[in-house]
Amino acid sequence: MTELYVNNEQVVLSENFSTEIIEGNPFINPIGETSLDITVSLLEPQNAYIFGYLQRTNSRKDTTQSFPCKLVVNATEYHGLCIVLEFSDEVVSIQLVFKNSIFTYAIDEDLMIRELNLGTAAIPSNIPANFNLTYPQTDFQLLMVLDPDITYTVFSGQELVDGDLLNRFTYTYNSALSRYDLTYGLDGNTVAIKGMFAAGSIGIKKVLYSPQPYLAAIIRRVIEALGFQVGENEIVSSSTWKNAIIVNNDTSLRFANMLPDWSVKKFIEQVQIWLNCRFIYNPTTGVVDIRFNHLSNENAELVQLTVLDDFTGATDEQDPVMNRQRNIEYNLPETDIYKYTDLGELRYKFQNITTSATSLPSLINSMMTVHNPHWIYLYEPDGNRVDAKLILRDGVPAFVDEYRMLQNNPDKESADETLDIVPAEMALIKFFIRDRMNEGTASWIWLMVPVVRNSQILSMSIDGEEDFVSVDDAIKDSSLVSEDTETKDVMQIVMFRNDRQYTVHGTSVAFDGMPEAYTRYMSDIHPDGTYHKTVVASPEIQNPLSLQYLNEHIYSKEAEIDATKLYRFRFLTPLQDLDISDTFVINGEYYRAFQFNKKINIDGMEEVIEGEFFKLK
Image 1 (cartoon, rainbow, N blue to C red):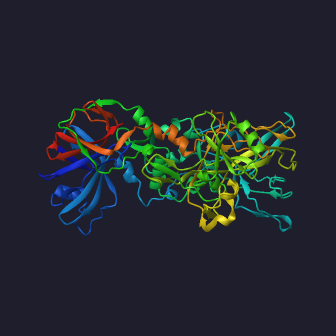
Image 2: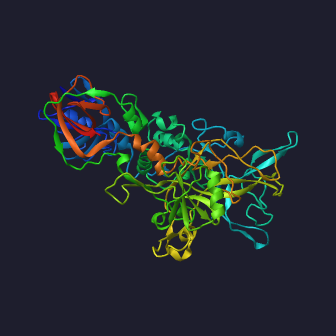
Image 3: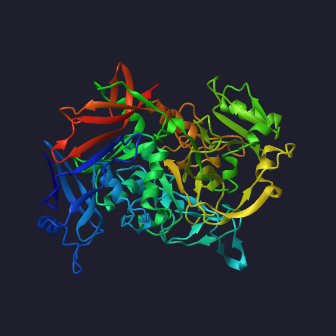
């Protein structure tokens, strides 16, 4: 028997009632689970009452709202939402949504993320101590970021044209311990920055903060703003991805203002593509779980499924959401720094040199000795694959080509997916260690800081005949500029862990060190030929934000399916509900389900279910 309840009231169904529930595997089919449209008679007094007498002109029923519903099929209850599609004097057409479709329905196409109430950042009283915390202990950090578009008119009409650091840090000399203690510099006190940009003695007073929120914190706040709670979150369980931070130059304490002007739908879709994860509504617990696709494959149970007939192969084109089978690119803004992160055709036009260097210091020494600006150096520390490319940038060895397109689809040249979540551009600055009012420049460290901007920049096209120029010149030659364009509306990401290793240059001093955001475990090479690690790792040049790294550690670990053929099987309704995300053994071969089609009539669910499957390779 089939019964439908809306707002706890039983709907009168017609004798010829029928519908079909389509249950999609959320890891490779984003539709979730929905029913087809149902038509209900408003001539039945009970139905007219439940739906607020929609057929009457004086009805006050808000048809834009959804209503809680329960569909009882035999002994199984499906709890979900009822959505009014349209109505006439005699009937109302409704749609029932269940399982993950409940969460999908809440993500309105027009709902903008900045319109949500995501709360505000509560600035801690001891800011340096906050750097020893990570999410979920804290929702944000106050990392330094460089905004090259902020300039200040100072004394004698001079202008600081090199930009300014937001969330500036200085030091307070601790005479009792004979050391410099890290101090936050934007609390209203004047900060001396002589030598920072070689612009003389300038005092800048700022009182505003620019919080940099953890991505996981924003995900939680978005889900809560939609009326749900976060359940299991495998991003937070990851020792790497829980450290992702969204960098921005907004001085509002509202979290919504720190984000790009995206819809909520785009935000969630971008996170799902980037980390190959899924936001899955759990109807049993009523929470939204965030699950990695590849872990669903590793943790899947094997289920023997007996089918009623032989399989039928179908060549219908489906689009299983599988990153290991798609080309993915970053939508990198065309600023000067980003131009070095994807060489494009340049990687094939210059001589690629595989060095015999067995360590990064030996490669740097070799490059400085040979000093050939026409070469792209390939660094292969493990001897069997290219881990990094380096060029001489302004005479200094520099990593390049770190964010090139990931090509997992050999049948296409272009990208299947474009990510507006991008690694932040990073700048290497000379940071002087000094007291608040001390303008001395005797001691300094090289520091990597994220660059944030909202300015107009130049795009570049490369003329294939100019191979005689150096790689560095080809990347930044102004004669190659084609047109003006605006910086893309992207979300910039860095990683953060409170691992700080610095070499003090000049006069050695005792100091706390500096908190640092990073994209690569190894910072850029300093002009004096040295470098430092931000996180101890092997190999030390790994970049956790590169698409190649994501492919190695996330994308390539998901189930390897043959997406060229879709198989359809018919099988009897099992005694217990099947978990569609499991791995099914059919006729001795392994399959992942794409979707189940379950037909329902007034007497209950039909005995036969039709399933669509992809075979595992």
